[in-house]
Length: 574
Image (cartoon, rainbow, N blue to C red; front, top):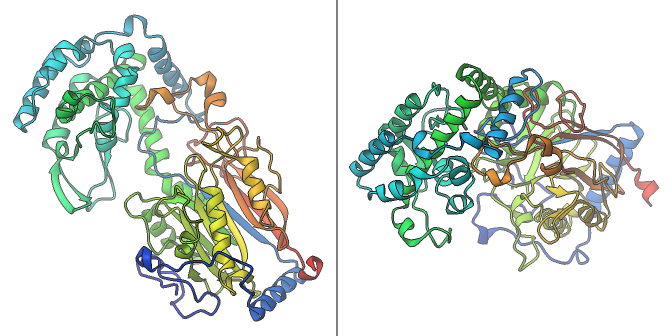
């Protein structure tokens, strides 16, 4: 039975026994206790009474000319690095000037490709060496003297593929870039260019003083696997294991903590040096401040504003990559008065990326009836490994004001889209396993992560995905055969992020970026037909083709997708 715990669904009507889904279990239940869907749909007869009520509701909906508006949006988790992806920033031409100059610096450094020791100096290393010895780490001066200090900053450090595969710079960046601390809504940021750090980085000495203090003298209280703990930042670093990263040598593995700390310091020093070389500190730091404010600090309010002012006329909204903070803020705004805001019973609080469903209270006066996510997750084909994470799927039942029972699902596909087909199959298997659920009408909003030109066996082709949903008697807001060039994403990495092998030149943003048809709304072809579909990357119900996003006004790297559907008369189907 759907139960509305205070921290999950405070706006949902009180939990009560429901007729339509006796197999529903609490999402918090242990995996072995979750219900198993029956594999054969042929042995399950639809509940005659509920089927009749569904047909009656559809007929009533037809006669009243009522339609459903459904919207879906991967709102995208907050990106801690405002420079990571190319954005459209028409308001300030300095953005593209700086980004193209950084690209030129790294692609054609020429005389700028100086020795590491000219940027991260001998004095800085000696101070770092002393601090690392004080905390009991092994000495890595031989690595400095014999190798790193003599490397060229671009060709032999930033663009060294072996350094990347050993994770010597990217691992400490991942762990210390942005740290969520107990008792604060604001994270703590390492002094670097590529996060929301707001301190002065106008010269290397200012950076180094702040960086050294952050790593060794700043104690933070964080929630970990073993509970809450307070430690200086350096204790959060993890050894780099050869078993996981085979390119690292056994000798490097043994000193991986001080070695990655040194490499992380060199990496950050080079970033500060590059920015202050291609731009004046007051110019790039002011630009960064504006970007952080719009893309990071104000991302949740911007997203909520768009939903509240532009898409509040939706009957159903399915969202992906939603944080717990977003859910709480949505419930406190006008959205919480307009919609039942439904989050998973088993909320992902660690990764903090959840699929969520908004149900318009006027359309669904009783709210959600039950969560059937557990049933769906136990309906995957046996022996098939489906790449899903906690929070990716939310599947619920609800009955609308005309008595039509729905299964409504929001899903966030894996990067390669390989879970998309199995998850749809599992939703349908779950519905087919129960005589009441089989009478429900499916609405499935998702980030399918499908591709126009998929790598065979490694990515999900969009047309193969369409063939899959059509084989079940379903269609989509894009019809039975979507246009592979009808894109809902356009993003590409810049040169200001740790994985330079994934960076796109300004001239290659379109060719080498993630420009794909990824977002869908799927439903029964015999239940509904499309009246109108649109996509939106402006927050104004307009989509600008060939525009990289997010922008300062549009806060996600996925467009919003919306469709208006009208019911097909049950008599017409017969």
